Length: 226
Image (tube, rainbow, N blue to C red):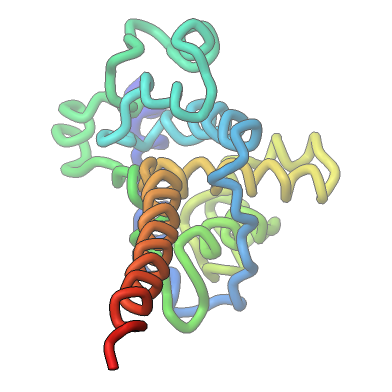
C-alpha cells in the first residue's frame, strides 16, 4: 500500500510540474473544443475526471452536488460518481490521504479545480488548449522510466494515465473523450461563466433598448423647440 501511494504521488507531482512549465517547449497547442454549454459532454467529462484524475488530484473548491448544474441528479451522482464514504455535499478530494502524503513525501499533488484557467499562454492558447493538446500527444518511449513521453511537453515525467482508454477507442473517439474531460475541467474552473455571459448579453440588450427609448424621447421633446 505504501508503494502504491508513492507511485500515485509521484504521478501527481509530475503532472503539476508538467503543467507549471508547459509553455516553455513542445509543439503548438491545438484548439480545444468549447463544450461548457454541452451538458452531455460535461457529464461524460465529470465521469472521466472522477475515474482518472481523483486518484491523485483533488478539486478542493468543487462540491459533488454542484454537478446538478450540468444536469445530473443527486441520485446519479451518488450511484455513479461517489466512492467509499464520500457524500454528495463533499468536495472532490483525492483518494490519496494528504496527511500520509505530507509525512512520507513532503508534499501533495496539485489541486486541479482551476487548472484550465491557470495554464494559459498568450502565444499558444488557453489552459484548455494546453490540456487538450497534452492529453492527446503521449507516445511510447522506452528510454523513459515510465515508458512514455509527450510531444507537447518533452521529457515529461508523468505517464500516460489514459492509455487504456485510448487503446480501446478509435482516434476520433479518444479526441472526443479528451475534449469532454477538458470541457468539464474548463467548466469546473468557473461554473458561473455561462450565466455571467448570459447576464452580460441581457444587460447589453437592456442598455441598447434604453438608449433607443432615450433617443426617441429626446427627439420628441425637442421637435417643437425652434
